Length: 68
Image (cartoon, rainbow, N blue to C red):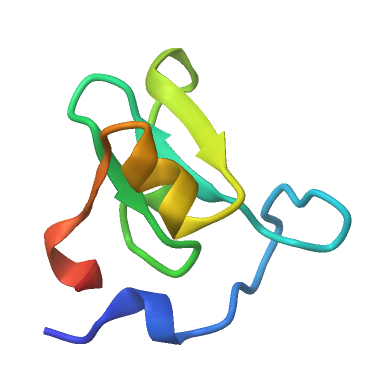
């Protein structure tokens, strides 16, 4: 399986000052990179954003299985 974090973000993704954030799921405590298939599938109810992998992991989130 290809690692989704190696590809730059494309398409209509929300950005902060030109940077596309990492999206975490508060229900599963998993985070997704912008090119991951699950990135846009996290519901607004369970969505939290991070500006770095380190911030996501410090908050107790782990990468989705295809992002390692």
